[in-house]
Amino acid sequence: LMSGKFSFSVLPSTESVEAAESEYKAPLTQLKIIPPSQTSVSYPPPQAAPKVQYNCEICGKKLSALGVNKFNGKTYCSPCYEDVTAPACKACGGPLKEFWCEVNGDNFHEDCFKCARCGQGLSGRGYFGEFGQYFCRGCA
Image (cartoon, rainbow, N blue to C red):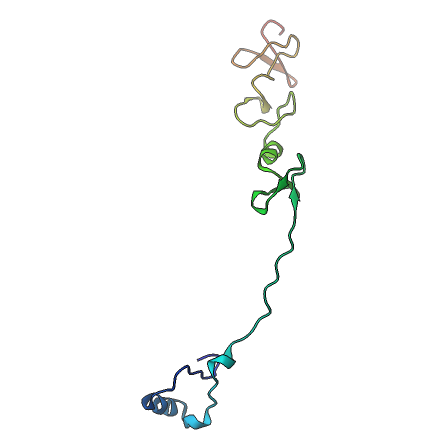
């Protein structure tokens, strides 16, 4: 049965004809039997989507559709995407990917967290901070 129309792929038995006649209160000879070959709907063949070439906004590398990362409407390869979305080091501006120091809400690479006067590394040492600048004990 399809959309109120009858479709038979094999000839019905006498019992099924009698059941159909009693159910629909009409002789089966008055019902229009549509062969299955005429009930199918044909659709136009699907068209291939246009091929789009993606390039990374930073390094220019050609990307496949599966390797595309989008951020703020721009396209990036995976390594550049990590650079763009990672927090930035306050001292050098570079991306913080693995380990870094967070000091009073400021983020630094461990090697970039240095005394503002003498340049001595402060990671893992005592320091003093004032107005966003950090100093070793000797310079404070």
